[in-house]
Amino acid sequence: MYDPENRLTDAYEPEVGTLPNDDEGRDEENVTKTGTTTVGISTDDGVIIATDRRASLGGRFVSNKNVQKVEQIHPTAALTLVGSVGGAQSFIRSLRSEANLYEVRRDEPLSIHALATLAGNFARGGPFFAINPILGGVDAEGSHVYSIDPAGGVLQDDYTVTGSGTMVATGTIEGEYDPEMSLEDARNLAIRAVEAAAERDTGSGNGVVIAEVTADGVDIDRFDDYDSAA
Image 1 (cartoon, one colour):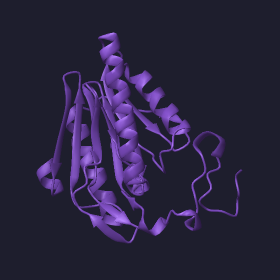
Image 2 (cartoon, rainbow, N blue to C red):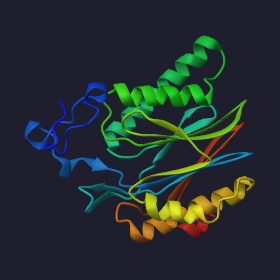
Image 3 (cartoon, rainbow, N blue to C red):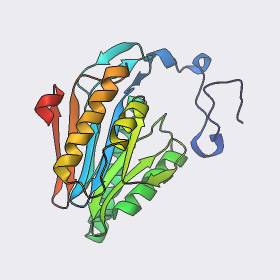
Image 4 (cartoon, rainbow, N blue to C red):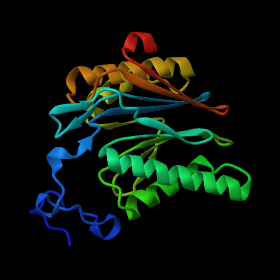
């Protein structure tokens, strides 16, 4: 049952389970989290996903400076790693396995809409701890970007941002986004959004990872600085 006095009890407990408090074994200060800024931008030619590379403990100590926070999970789709690292990694493995199984059984890839629905169902009904990823993909219907919240909500938009650097990154994109922008312009905008967030958000930084998703597949590159990524 939801307990408003317990900051670690999830309001959606019947769907996603109860997050244990420190006395029951989970020490929030020692859970490795990505902190993070993740950006997804959709264009007519494909999807750009950009993330920073920092992981932290308790939001105060940088535990890793070289985290790849976006993974391919489908022939033409990628998912970001946001929140608790363990929960996000488990979520990515589970979703990738289901997408692969579908393709083997049906001899065709899962549609991006169906993949997003499956991701929402997993987030709502599974044991994954504190995740809020972005799913970006391309299929016969075009380019798609979805955000998946910890309670399983799935929202599609032209662009979306998740993570601790959301406010700064969203402000950067809001003033410059154009529905008719090229994939290259979207890439540059996504890089600037992650860079701006890293300037103000202590949970974001240490370079950028870029995933370019098109009908031909997923290409992921890592960069130590923002200038070399552009």
